[in-house]
Image (cartoon, rainbow, N blue to C red):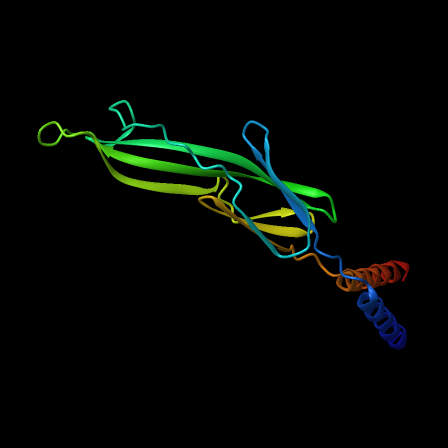
Length: 189
């Protein structure tokens, strides 16, 4: 019994070593909220891709008004946001996943008139960005994607999702067959 088991394991190890590893091949499409394709790329075989396709948010001209959101009694904030849907595809399996990206610009204005009726003044400006879904990674097919939005820049990283190798699956199958055979023998006795 032991020599057959060792022979089986040896054959499985050789077959697993000969099995080609599936190449990494993926792509992305960035689509605006009104359906316009902002950018697309297919056939990526590297681990990362970086691009700046999300349009810059355009703040309205002029100062904030008392109707804008207030953070302090006399400080009002003006903001503008652009959004897009990033679709990531594992081209080996054809499976896709999506992430909602955003880039928001803000300005805060001091509306209290100063000496001699001074005009409103910009106090601060800042940006916020990122995927709307804050989960760290997305999985599509055999790939795990990391998406980071830093204002206009979208940073993508793809890596294998930790799928077991064919040799590991074959060894598990041999072990399960052995357990099934032992169970059948016990029932027969």
